[in-house]
Length: 72
Image 1 (tube, helix red, strand yellow):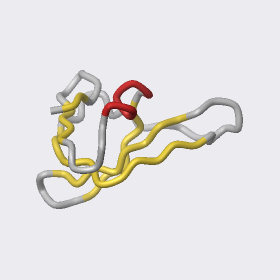
Image 2 (cartoon, rainbow, N blue to C red):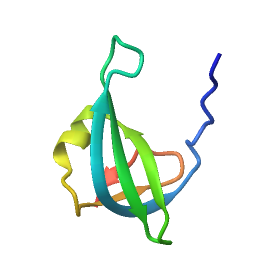
Image 3 (cartoon, one colour):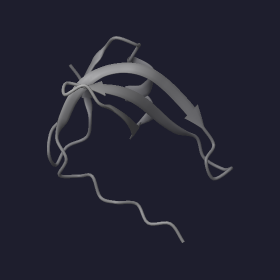
């Protein structure tokens, strides 16, 4: 069994450097962004479809503690 760490209280901001989607469990589509954070590190983030479709490489994204990521 896999357990996902809660990232709800995490806060960060960065720039989209890649987009990916796939069927991880074989039945539902999931959407990921690769984000270059302001501290220089890269992070893979799962996001909702609506946000994924609205972003292009080079767009800014911000995640505030307790909220979902949003376009800057």
